[in-house]
Image (cartoon, rainbow, N blue to C red; front, top):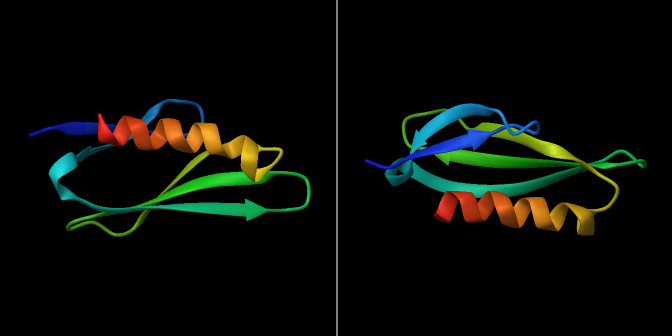
Length: 76
């Protein structure tokens, strides 16, 4: 079994999941006119949908690097 540490925006692990049970990962961007909040939506077998806030950025393009890092962490 491979456990994945799922971090919040501060980098602190807030959830551990079994990699074999990860069904889907989605990117959500919430725009308020000043910043973009980047959120990962995770579906794990047997659990309700999980939303993990990954941080606030000045543009969607600025959020691309943290998103890529988050995906790389899941794939490792």
